[in-house]
Length: 246
Image 1 (cartoon, rainbow, N blue to C red):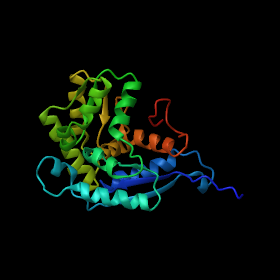
Image 2: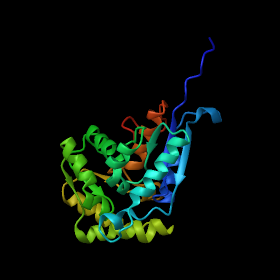
Image 3: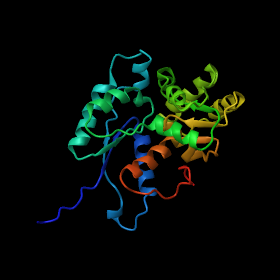
């Protein structure tokens, strides 16, 4: 009887939420794979549906365009193309996680849950949450912190307005972050007793890439990258022992 070659895992990236964050995850997956030839990299399919309705606007009731319909269609397309596990490089989109995971026949990585678990494993005592208004209102990270027994804090209203400006007026428009606004939010969280803060928006991951942020920040995109590689049977390189980029 002829032997069959075991099927390789295929990572599906449900992206475009936004495009720069999806591109960054793809590059990060390449950079952290121990490869000496093309075939050592994981098999991957990427959907970048930039026209997906804005997640924050829907969550806040500012739009009646439900992003879930588009996300479900793209998830099904990725599975049809061969994806065996899915990653969503958008924290706000995890508002729809339970519905999407129930609708698809393959595992979907939960970036907020994985990120909070890493913060807990690293000894974090109180986690600050830097995220969109939609993610905060949906309590995506607050709920995950509650599950993990980890105290949390969010920026004051004025500092949160600055975070939203960094995301929407800077990163999503292809501009460098306004670091005065970003640092004001980080300082606000430190004043509330946070010893770590999660970059709980994939656009904010680009701030770490471009501005060289220090160990106070936990990057949710790095966590997703590491867990996606592990899910595909690859031991990542270039991360420290707890998963952050060196």
